[in-house]
Length: 165
Image (cartoon, rainbow, N blue to C red):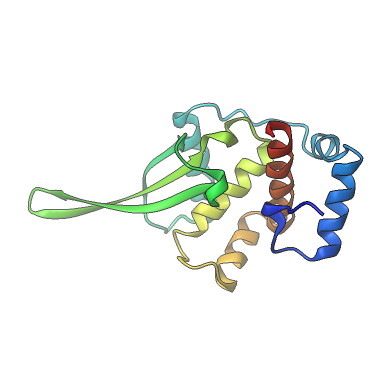
């Protein structure tokens, strides 16, 4: 039985269903049928506008974002689909804080729903630092199908790995 590293926390019966799809060579087709549309967010400027629009819709009172970009250095294997950081810099006699969101560049070509799921996840960290109940409630407020998208994103990563390996 092959290990499914992106699905390690899921119940065995779900993992078995995924293995059956892989054995029949149907995982990729199932995902492309379910998520046929790629997103149009191609560069860092468009990504900033996309993230800012979601932030303005759901988190108007959250701290402002200083930078949003695709990051080619983020390693999906190390569980980093995106990052949210607070960067502090000395500016004159004051300390300036800036919030940054970085999205793994592998998602530049992902389906639109997966980009939204990653952005929602990182935006939720503006309000909730930990992955707790309040965090996931905020995620589902911004994307009602958040948990399904997260699972399907893990399937997508599994499929990409199979194609590469």
